Image 1 (cartoon, one colour):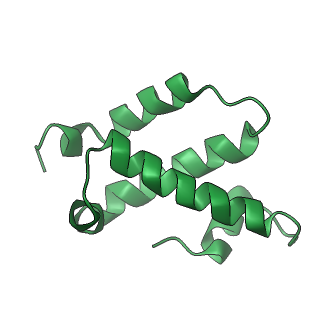
Image 2 (tube, one colour):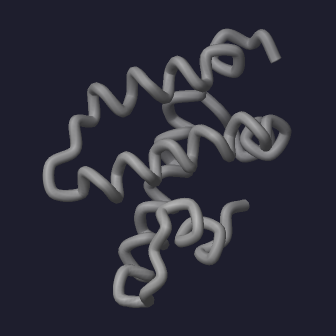
Image 3 (cartoon, one colour):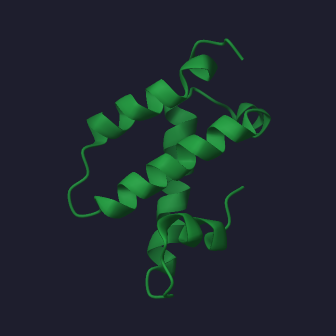
Length: 90
């Protein structure tokens, strides 16, 4: 879905030292979006635009706050982004 190159561009990272960290955070972001959005793999692919937005938001938050993330705040923001999917509107 989101490539390492896209993620690095979004985060404005030009060096390779954080590549493994960014890949791990991408994986974590995907799982968070699926969990918060109550999505299966199929739902995940159907709602691609919203999912991309949520994943990039989560990725940016986790990357910038990697030493002390507030998961409650992150989860509340993801719920707002994914509201329509969570409630079955889309």
